[in-house]
Length: 68
Length: 364
Image 1: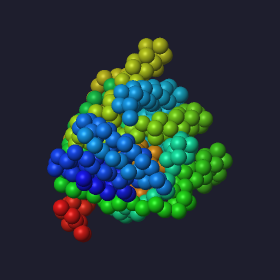
Image 2: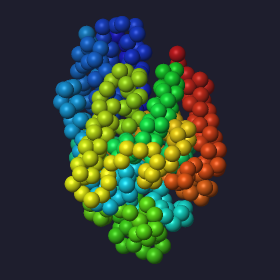
Image 3: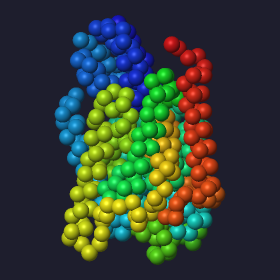
Image 4: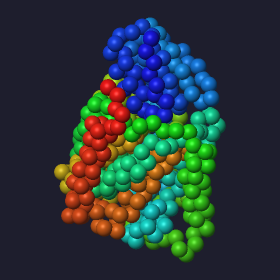
């Protein structure tokens, strides 16, 4: 499973990083972001690609588990 | 996440914002200028005496409202977060350059849409340049352009720009002698809706833009980058809302709020090449900033100190534009303004290259 650390980055960078990571066509990814906009954008992008997304939040940081 | 509900939300928000932009002209704002972030920051800079162009001096309550609307909603939703430290000086310069482009065209991307909604065909040339500028920026994004990460900061850092808006509101109401106000018939700065109307309009637009993440630059950028049409839908909804409301106002009031023509448009010129090049600079600079001037205001309200610095860049750029004769007028662009736009494009290109191809510790 690949992890993309996009904390501190703002749109559209987290989505670009995820898409680059997705080139490897793995079945699961973890994305770390630290703002609501990036959380929404990454979720939307992953859903568009047919992935399921679950989000957990801790101290203002979000961990997105992205799975097929 | 409900994707369909999200889309309906942004369409409704766009329509409301478009209608507000149209109505503000009815209530007294300059024609085709219900909203213009660039013009309004410029007017505010003038009111504070940062430039002395007597025709464009007024503390615009719309700006105050947008920042505070975003601030209040972000606080309520738990999204207010003081952060910054992602290339602040670079963002200042990008904001400065974006303003040079805006004042060549005479409007920010938001006003470009409002001008289209009023039938100003010059804005089509602006839109072409704007899209080309965004495409240029997207090229660099795809190659790895980044201004690096931001960090959490003390709350005060994120609260300063919203607090400054409160100070500006006090200055506007108190109107002390050292604040400059354009005479009612002295130019665009003298034309404005009543304070309370402008302020409420700003608050509503700021709140809606905060919720929907509306961004004129993001609209075209996301379609090119990700084939993601959400933000562009909002962009289109503003145009529709504004256009329809303008047509209705033209039909039911004595005034003309829609006139499809190149010549004779309010606060606009007909030099197509420079309208396009000005907006090219805006599109390019704003993609590198991560959002249009409206979005920078909204992010500032959410506590983003980097965006607040970009706003300071926009304000400083506006002051320089009027102090050095860079801003266009209804007569067309100035020679100084043309040089400044070309220099601005060069500066933005250097920033793009430096943060794409010459990053320290770049991982591939």
